[in-house]
Image (cartoon, rainbow, N blue to C red; front, top):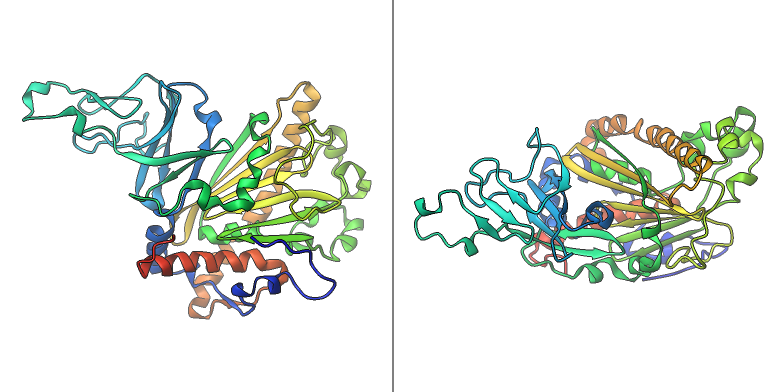
Length: 421
């Protein structure tokens, strides 16, 4: 890990010479062949976040997760001993999907003491053991112990549930995350159970949308609605984040700002002033208890937020005002993906607290739509350029440059049989 204050002259990119400074190819966003390669090299080798422990808060709670990029469906469950487990969502009799409601391809959740296949009624305990076979005597030398659910490597860090689809993961979850991410382990994620979930299927490569949240160079020109017309000329002067950091395949950027409640009125929507909330979250900041572990590694004086990009497809955006966002980007083809966004807050204690949270949610959707609104056109442009899709990136796009290089490195290492140790 490297930690550098930006000098008066020079650039963040120069601190990480391995990423280079030349144009970056976006062939990795338009090539069906590269998509097939990254399915094997990235999504079947890396640790993938599929949820949080609150999703399986009690014994017997479960949810299913469709991971189309890996052609699999998973069951995530807290067993009767309290352990969080993951299994392929497949009955061991004839391969039928085991857990589903109404529509087999749709994700579901619930609570149970056993899983029973809807096809032939084979039954499994929550630890994956096969416990009942319909008309067992009709089978030939069947040993139920040999036909439990197929497990998937599963581990939990800071309440985030990760799975790894490799037969033998090249690293443990802690080793994979590295110190920049694991330093966040003491952050009080568990104190923010209030959540708002969103998802959307988008016609662009997953990396195109992920790139949109890795730099703030676009903010003054794309998000002009953040200010009233008389304030926009000042906004258009540009914005530069004060801290960038890389650690292995992971990245982060910090932003700075005065608290939103101190912004001039011409930079506020009327609803923000009424609810005392907005894009940066509720103005009445909760007491989360002292220093927030792992945040603001650059020690920015006017720290506003940290954006941690965990390879390959997870983003945790932590706000200084006492809440956080999670984004996930799930590829569904070489030019489509499913975006998931979840906002987490401390429990609302008053009606005003609830209104403030819901205002922040509405503002999130407004600005996320502004980002997403460009994506289909971007994908069309990349497809049209084809082999000419090399682009110059500036110093504020360091994380974009590093991300595409990391994906390419994982593919090259895997294809060269070095996997991604």
